[in-house]
Length: 120
Image 1 (cartoon, rainbow, N blue to C red):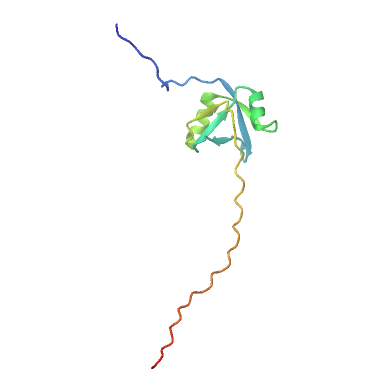
Image 2: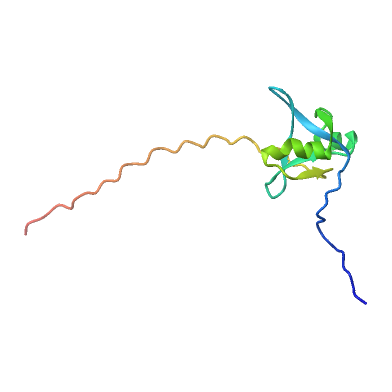
């Protein structure tokens, strides 16, 4: 009897998550999907399965649109974003703007003094 293992950790088929609540930001031509970063720094599109989950994580002022997962993938693929994260559990605040460095006083010029020659 042959044992058949079908434990594929990452199936090749992607199952659509259905209509998602996608966070957007205003842009010059209308709304644009907000892109986020994974903990490893890769860009990802984000969708939520309910408006409640979106507002619980991003706040009630976050604008959103409804998109199916395949439509969200098609929208972000030309930008090189191939990952869609559904219902993330945590977001970190945006990094604070980089503060201007404290001015360093100019270095004093280095001089080499020639030792005085003495005659005996």
